[in-house]
Amino acid sequence: MGSHPKSPTSFRRSTRIAHAGLDAPSPETGERGARPHAPPIYQTSGYEYPDARQAEEAAEGQRYIYSRYASPNEDALAGAVAQLEGAEAAVVFASGMGAIAAALESRLGAGDHVVSVHGLYGGTHELLVGLLPRFGVTTTFVDAATADAVAPAIRPETKVVYVEAISNPLLRVADLDGLSALCRDRGVALLVDATFATPLLCRPIERGATLSIHSGTKYLGGHGDAICGVVSGGRADVARLVPLRKMHGASLDPFAAWLVLRGLRTMGLRVERQVSSAATVARALVRMAGVERVWYPGLESHPDHALATRVLDGPGAMVSFEVAGGLDGARRVYDRLRLVSRAASLGEITSLMTHPARFSHLRVDAESRRRAGIADGLLRLSVGIEDADDLVEDLRQAITG
Ligand SMILES: *Cc1c(COP(=O)(O)O)cnc(C)c1O
Image: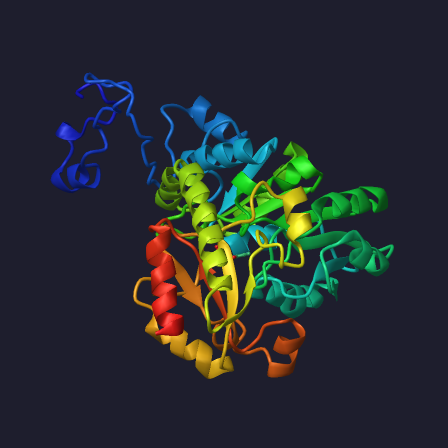
């Protein structure tokens, strides 16, 4: 320790306090050196250099400088996600919305046009209709994420087609193969929010999309303890996002990056279990008195069942269903849940439920909700890793009790 260049013993008390602990040996290089089994958390705002030459190398982009620009925990998570996505590169953000904003801005300027689909995640819809028009970017919304629905809306100034791999809350599936062929043909970037599908079940880059986007808050982290976003794609496409992250200040905190990477390492097990339980729950709901309709892409009755079989490696772990009695019927069921949590978000190890008409779509007028197929009695379930029979029993007692 005495060999540390800033060994503080000769300094005055306040100086020693300010530098306390900073001369501790790194576990990888110090006297008791050994490589940590879990990655360290680089919970630092920035980096210092032993000499002027290394400081200059940092300025040239060869070393870490400041954690808003880039950090080792972000880079470790980005590398892991890129690999899972089958992409050349990835960049992580402080949130899914940070990722979505940067992904759109990386492709758009004043005068440009976007084609997207009705029923997008609320935050994305707000960005497209509430903010981007102020900067001269307009969006046309079509009814389905298929080449047939999107093609007529593409104009010479269209730069982006933006879809969600599995939509909320009716779990409609995007025809990624048809859309990527269309976009390639028309020279338009295809951006896919694959949050509901997870990289285990859907890898948009491998199917020809330009950028694949995730709210890492959901299945990637999986434990409901960190907010995060990720964008994957080709090296050059992803490189356009890095300065936007820096300018927006949408960088992911090192501890949050560490948490999401820790969660990611069990995603395979979690999602496998969640998909299998979701199928059990969906089949049980179909047979339950008081349930009028079940929306799950794994059921033959779902309008996109055949498409889901083609573009997804599994139908996901979100299940939506309509109960009898409209708003009051759904409120009653929602109120009676004992195991499933009444909570926003999804993709966590515990099961969560929302009542879209009175929650995510509360500010959407009743007529627009009906047109989007969101019935008053619709409930949306994110299936967790609990025992599937316990989930079925909780739903049964809430619905039929
Ligand atoms: C949650 C979510 C987002 C936004 O992600 P945040 O991490 O909350 O910013 C975007 N898209 C979908 C589909 C989501 O579920």
